Length: 253
Image (tube, rainbow, N blue to C red; front, side, top):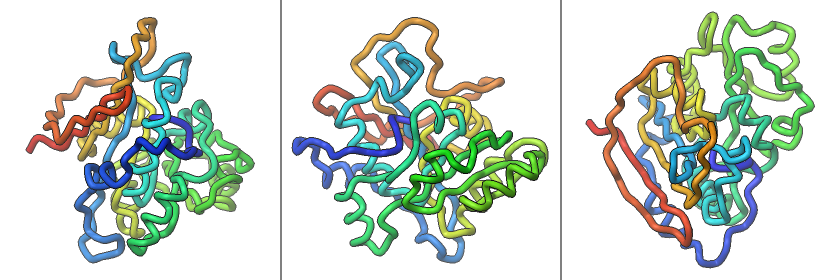
């Protein structure tokens, strides 16, 4: 959730090779027998824990955060995001910059990862830029309870995954993505989706960009849910950028 979906070019000071090495993931090759879902979450937060500034997470970011976002997406098969975040953050267009598209191509992957939106009500219309500006066919993750007419309409512009009866079964959705050759998932929030993944114990990694900003107010935290959870994580690295601190955490055990 560290910014909008269309990523602009980073500055020369950003060491892309270093970041690609620092954020490499060990995931079974897509489509290989036994491939299991791997879910990494990427969020940005202020110094006082706010997930948004002025209602948007992108307002907390900067050029190096946006460039890292492209690197993280480069290591994913699919970028998973909640419907509310799609609308607020302005998702639509390419996921990664040209340099990272070339990085993917050199490794035998499609130039762009796919976007997947999680939605129970399917309020996004087929004409939304998330669908019309997509450079790789997007996906919609929903439940059986979603309106059938909206599912049919979105099936014209996206691949629809139905997981769960009355609410979206995120574990089942991740398994289905892996079965379709997309085991490596990058979730970009929002807080509700991150919280739901945490509740279901589906978060394998959390990448947190710490913005040098104090927000105060009543901005949400990076994860929210109806119930508390205690998922212990271990620090993998802390990388200081020009202004920001980039943290990577993995499962503790």
